[in-house]
Image 1 (cartoon, protein in one colour):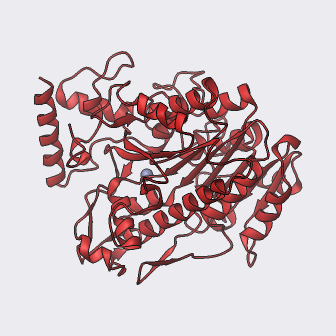
Image 2: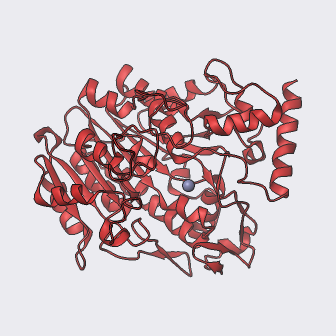
Length: 480
Ligand SMILES: [Zn+2]
C-alpha cells in the first residue's frame, strides 16, 4: 500500500514538473516554515508563530523566547532582508498575518511585527534591512517595514536601544564594529542596526567571470560582517546565546529566476558561515566545543535544476535574458521550473559538541518523515530545546538559514564558485559532520495535496508525511 502511494506521488510530481505546473500547488511560505523551525508546530501559510485557523490568542511560543525566559540567554537576529520580514519575525514576534509589518499596515488593534520585535521582544542584537530612506522614501504605509513614528523615536533615542542605520558614504562596519567592541547583553542595552537598499535587502552581490563575486556597496554590511558583530556581542553573555542568521536574498533571487543574484547570495551565506566557524574555532568564549551550529533552508524556491554542470563549473557568468525581475538562462546552464516555492525537502547540516550532534542522529526516524535520513522542520525546534535547555549539551546555538535555498541552489553555487558539486563550506564533512534532508511543508500545502489524493486533511494527531513533500526532489539515492 505504501509503495503504491510513493509510486503515485512520484508520478504526480513528474507530471506536474513536465507540464510546467510546479508552483501552482500551494507550498509552504517563509512565515509558516519559520514558525515550524521556531516553535516546533505546523501552521498555515502567512502565520508568524500563530496557530492554524488564526484563533484569537493564538500565539505559539518560539524556543528563542523559552531560552531567554528560562536560561537568560541572549538572543540575536541578523538578516539581509527586512528585519520584520517573515523569517526573522518568527523568532521574535507573533502575528496571524506576516504582512502586518507595522502598526500602520496592520488592522486597527493588531500589533505591528516591527513594533513587537524592536520594542517588546528586543533581541539583544537585531541587524537587518528595510531602511525606508532607500526602500520606501515616500512612506507608503502598506509598503514599509518600519513605521515613521518608530524610526523617529529610534533616532531621538529609546532607552536601552543603541540604534545604527545606513549612512551614505559611510562603511557599515565602522559603526557596527564600534558597537560590537563595547555592547554587553548583561548591561541591558540592545543593538538595532537598520540597513538596506532600493530592493529592500542589503543589495545584490555581483558575479564576475572566474568564479569571483563582489559586493554592491560597503554602506551595507556583508552577512559575515554583521554575523561576526552579533557573535562578539552575544558571546559576552555568561548565560549563553542563540543567534539566528538569515541570507534572505536567495529566496528573492529565486522568485525572479535570477541565477546571478542567487549565486552571489549563496556566496554571501558561505562567507558568513566560514567567518563564524573560523571565529568559533579560535576558541573565544563561544567555541565549537560549546556551540552547536546548524545550517539549513526554510524551503525551496524556484524548482531550480542545474541543467549543464560543465558550463557552470567554468566560473563563467551565465547569460541572462529577460529582466532582473524575471529572468532565464538562454545558455541552458540552469532551469527554473517555477517562480514560486516548492515542497522539496532541503538539506540540513550541523556541527558542534559531539553529544549534541548525536541527538540529531537519534531524532532521525523519531517523527514521521517522507524518507529515511529526512528530518521534519518541526524537529529543529525540538533539537535546540533538547540540547540547550533540557540536556545542556551545548551552551550556545546558531541557526543559519538560506531562505529558499534548495538543493539546486546549493549545486549551482557550488559549481560556479568551486568548480564542483558539494564543495560549499558547510558541505565539508570534516567541518559539518552531520547532514540530512529536512521536510518543509506547512498545513496549507499538506491539505492541497491531501484533497487531490482524496485523503483526510492534516491533523497533528494523524497525518501522512509522504503527502506533504515533493517526492521527485528527493533525488537518486535519497528517495525511499
Ligand atoms: Zn519566497
